[in-house]
Length: 401
Image 1 (cartoon, rainbow, N blue to C red):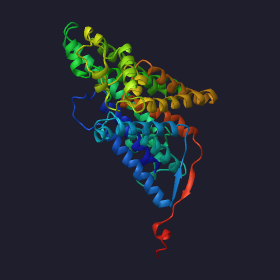
Image 2: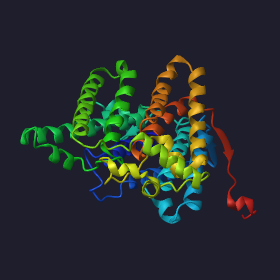
Image 3: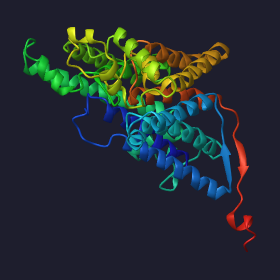
Image 4: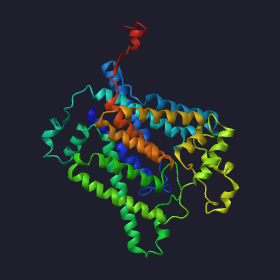
């Protein structure tokens, strides 16, 4: 069962950045990208329900981040209900309450299924024999062994997804540089990366930050990964350089200037302080509250889906309710960092680094998923023991023979 769970986790974390980031797929590719997370949640929920049915008991594991994340999801749902002009659309939107709810649900399901597999045997069978005995005979067995034994299926999936994004980015940029002169390739490169401004779904800046976060995580664990780790380090580094090249060809820079994001956040707060303007309504707030002076800049024709940083974006879209929940999460991570053992400080440094990055840019769903994976990486190792809850059969509850 642990193998099945880890395959689900690996698949979701591998596919999500590959589908959302523009090196491989852009918004011009009309596919239901959030379907990956939806299917992953459904699979984990069925896995959890089956084990509860089979054992007649439910295991519940608590972590340090449960309450802040739950509060954040509630804030998004409340904002969609009370502030959004299209509540159903906002709840189903991949850029609004629907996305945040599915991310938080994914967090809880990963933790709870971890409580199940931690009680099971670590010996997995493949074609009737332990996987270890088939490693030399079956090529796929080595991969299955890594997945079944690893406690880091999510991070491994993210790392391998980052390698695909970096390699595809290098192929795209390399083909453009080989086919066009330096002075004429600008338009062609931006066609390969069609998202010229920040998007809740994915964009070129998010791609660069994603590769940087994975590079930072890899550096903390490089000694444990051997030759593959150094090869991955080189590919990610080159991918970041390639993404930086694409960014250098885009003018104006595809990020809402800080002063405009601040003005929009304050004006939104004046009019909707508690719930904001709605989780996926930043474009509306931008159109309504942007200062007239922006028309004298290169951004006069631009329309932004995200604010200047994560905190302005939360205040604008989900009000002080959402921003307060997020600040509670930051405080919880900071408190844990001060008291954590040295072995756990590395992953907490990455998480705190993400919070600092969010001071200068907002996060769409791809980077929020990366952040959630980093939180899970710490939470599943430091969580309290699972509580076993005995379930009562319906027939027993009604005294039915």
